Every structure is written in C-alpha cells, then in structure tokens.
Amino acid sequence: MLFKRFNKTNLMLHVESAYTKKDLPMISVGDTVRLGVEIKEGEKIRIQAFEGVVIAKKNHGINKTITVRRVLQGIGVERCFLVNSPKIKTIELIRSSKVRRSKLYYLRDLAGKATRLKQKFNK
Image 1 (tube, rainbow, N blue to C red):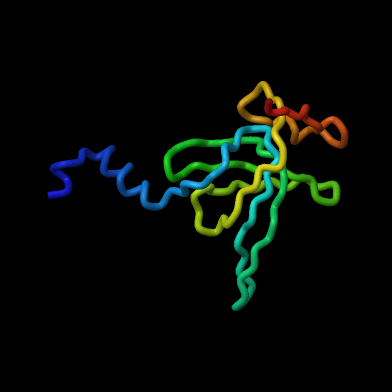
Image 2: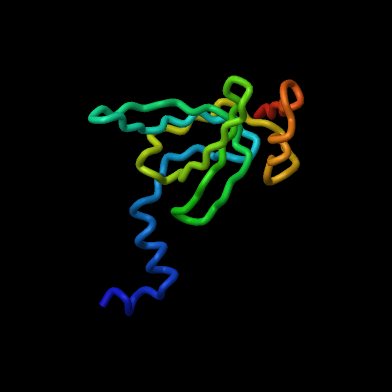
C-alpha cells in the first residue's frame, strides 16, 4: 500500500526525514566550528570537543558530511563527520571566514600564519 503512494525517490526522502536533525546551524566552508562528539571509554560515555576549520562539505540528504581540520602540536588532524549522526551532540559556530573556493585542501600544505583566513562579519 505504501509503495503505491510514493515513488522510490519520495520514499527515500520520507524515511530519511525521520533521522535528519532539524536544529543545525548554517555551516559553510571556511567556518570555525566546535563539535561535541560522544566518545565511549569502557562503560563511561563522555562528550569531547573537536574544534577546527571546515575545509570540505558534502550535501546529500542524510549523508551530509563536513571535514574539519585543526593543528594539534604542530601536526594537522582532519576528521570527517556525519552531521546527522547521533554521536554528534552539539555543533557550535565559532566564526565565519571569507573563502573563494568550495574545498580548502590547500591549507594542508601551509603552516603557521599562512593558514589564517579573513573573518566575515555579518551585518
């Protein structure tokens, strides 16, 4: 009965809508974000913050991902996060930057002050 009312695309969107998060901030490439990631250590569960610059973004329904880069003790660390994952508890937008590319992979080759991005001020 259900399949007669929905075609395949509408059915997928209907099923995915139950699992997508509604309270997400508008994240774009170049933004500095702080993510609260749920980490399980043995029996304990805690939330660990991961803060960095969004260098890539993929938008595709429930599979929406962002790649966040930060430099930790002189070593670049990149993590790819599923935005709609239940392991992501909070997403906080720290600052926005002006960028002219959709992917900021060139930041991998830069170090120090060269990695700074110009801040975008909202009016």
